[in-house]
Length: 472
Ligand code: URP
Ligand code: ZN
Ligand code: ZN
Ligand code: ZN
Image 1 (cartoon, rainbow, N blue to C red):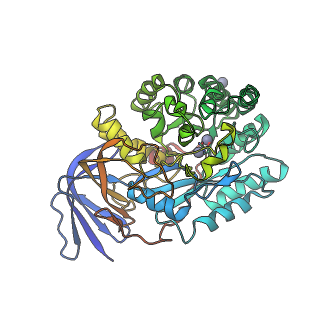
Image 2: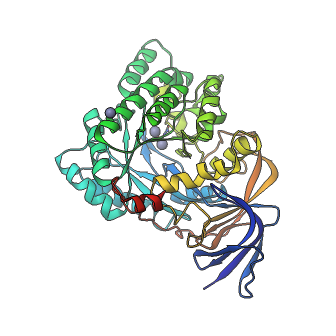
Image 3: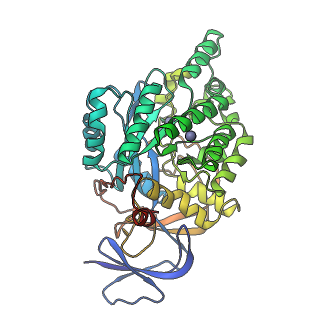
C-alpha cells in the first residue's frame, strides 16, 4: 500500500489546531503526530500551510435540467472545478420531477456521474409529488442507495414546487426513515403572482427577479417548513438561507429545541442586490433563487454562522453562461435560468471573507465547509475531519497568497464568475482524495471518473445514546 506523510503543516479541524504530521496508508489516515517517520513514505512538505479536511459541498446541481435548459457544468467540469477549490465530496440533487418511479431519477444521476466525477459524491433525493406508489418506494430507495436526505421545493411554482401535502408526507418519511428533509423555503405561489404582476406592468429587467421574491416570502416559507417538520417530528435542513427573516425563524425554532439546521452560501455573505440593478442585462449574471438581498442582511448571516445557528456553507452550484443560456431571459427576467457558478470559490471565499477578516475562527471555517455537512448528512467520520481511520481527503492550503478571482482563470465551464475582481487571501495548493493527489501544486492530476459514490447509513432519530454520541 502506498504511504505518504504530510509534514510540518498546521492541522486544523472543526475543534483543534496544532502543528503535526499525518501518515496516510492507502486511502486512510493511519497516524497523526509529531515528527512521524516511515522510510517507505512519500514526504509531502506542508511547512507554512494549513492542512484541512477536504471540503464537503452539500448543495450542487451538476448536469441538471432546469428552467427549459440544462446547467453548463457537468460532472466532469464541475468536479474538477470543485477539486481546485478544495472540495473533495459533493452531495448533488437527483431530480425526480416528471418521473413516475423515484428510482429512475437516481439511475439517471448515477449515469451522469459515473465515469466523470473526479471527487467523491452522494445524492439527495428530490421529490415533487408523493403519491401512494412513490410514498411506498421512498424508504426502500433511500435504504438501497444509501441516501440520508430528501429535498423538497416550496418554490418554482411551474416546475418543482411541492404541495403542502407532499411536503408534509416528505417530513413524515423523514421521521420514519431518519432522513433529514432539506427544503428550499420561498412561497412559490405568491412569487408567481408578483412575477405576473411585474410583467403586466412592463417590468422585465433582471432586478425584478429580486423585487418579486422579497425576503418576507422566504421568512414565511421558512416558518411554515419549520412548523410542518416539527408536527411530523422530522429533522429539517433549510437550504440557502439568504435573509434576516429566515435566520430569525431558524433561531427561534432552535431555541425551542426543534431539530432544525440551516445552510447559507458565499454570495449571500458577500454580494448584494444592487448587482441585479446594473444597466442593460448585466444583472442576469446574478439571477438565482432566493435572490441576493440588500447588504443589511449580510451581518445577520455572518452572526448566525458564527453562532452555529447556521451550520453549513453550500455552493448551490447551478451554472449558466452569460452569453449562452442566461440570454433566454433577455426580454423577460422570469425566463433567465436561475443559478450561478460557485463550486470552485466556495471554500476560499469563506476562508478569505470569514477567517482573514476576523468574522469566524479557523475552526468555525472547517466546521462550515466540511465537518457539519459530514455530520448532518451521514458522512462523518469517514469524511469531514482529520482523524485516524478517516479517508485521507486533505487540502493543503496556503493562507498567505493573494489572488483575484476571475473567469479567465477559473475551471468552471461558464464565461463569467460572480466574484469577478474580488481579491481573496488563501488558496488550496494541493488536494488529496482518499490518499491520492487530485490537485498537486495547483495542477489537476486526478482521474476522470475516479470519484466514488458514497453510500450513507440511515440513522433512525431514536438512536441509542451511544449511537448518538458516536455520530455527533
Ligand atoms: O437559483 C438557484 N438556486 N438554482 C438552483 C436551484 C435551487 O433553487 O437550488
Ligand atoms: Zn433552491
Ligand atoms: Zn410543538
Ligand atoms: Zn440549489
